[in-house]
Length: 270
Image 1 (cartoon, rainbow, N blue to C red):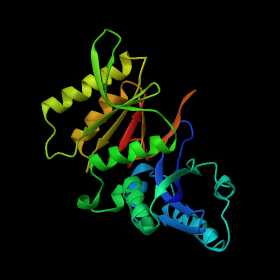
Image 2: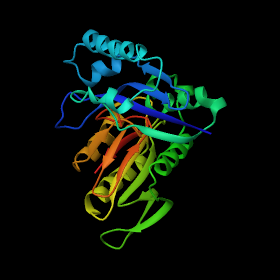
Image 3: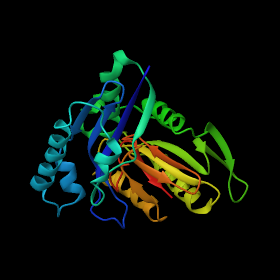
Image 4: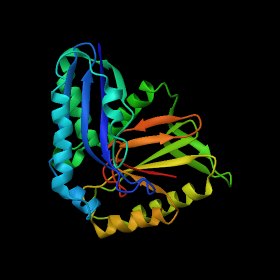
C-alpha cells in the first residue's frame, strides 16, 4: 500500500458568500515523487457560476499553475508551500491523504477522485453513482480519523425520529437522488421536510448531498430554493471543507462542494 495526497483548486468569486466551484486538482505520491495536475475543460459551468469572470484569463492562470508544477518534476514536492501562494479567489483545499492506495492501481484511484470532484467533466454514464459517493465519504472520514455511524436515527427537537445516512460529531448527512426524469410530489414533500429538519434541529448540523444531472432544471431550482429559504449554504461537491470547533473534514463527492447550487454530490451545509 502507498499514500496518495491530493488537493482541489477552487474559485470563489465572493469570500463572503462561501460559494465555490472546482477548477483543478493536484495529485502527489510522496514515496515516488509522482505528481499530476488536472484541470477542467468544461468552462461553460464556470461561466454560468460567475458571468462576470474573464474565462480566458482564468484559464491562463490555471495553465500557469500547471506549468509551475511541471518545473518541479524531480525530488520531493512541498505541497503545502506550493498551495500557500493561492489564498484569495483562487485557493486550494486542505490536502487529503489516502493511505490505502495500491501501487498498481494508482492511476485508477486518481481517476476515481477526478470523477467524484469533477463529475460534469464526464458523460452521464461515467459519473459516480450514489453508492460510490457514500463509499468514498466513509473513506474520507476514516482518513481524517473521524468516528461515524451509518443509517443512524436521531431524536429531533420535538422528540421525532430523524433518519440520517451518516452521523459524525454533530453533523448528519442525508443523500437525495434528484437524477430522475420527473420530480414527484413525494420528492418535493421530502425536500420540504428536510428543510424543516435543518432549521428546527439545532442539535445536528445537517448536510445534504444530492445528485442532479441538470442543475438548470426549473424543478431542481425550485427544490434548491426551498432549502435556501432556511438559510442553508450551498457548496459544490463532497467538494469542500466543513469546519466546526471539533470537526474539520473534507467531504468529497462531486463530493464533495463546488458551487453554490450543488449538483451531483452537492452539499448544503446548515
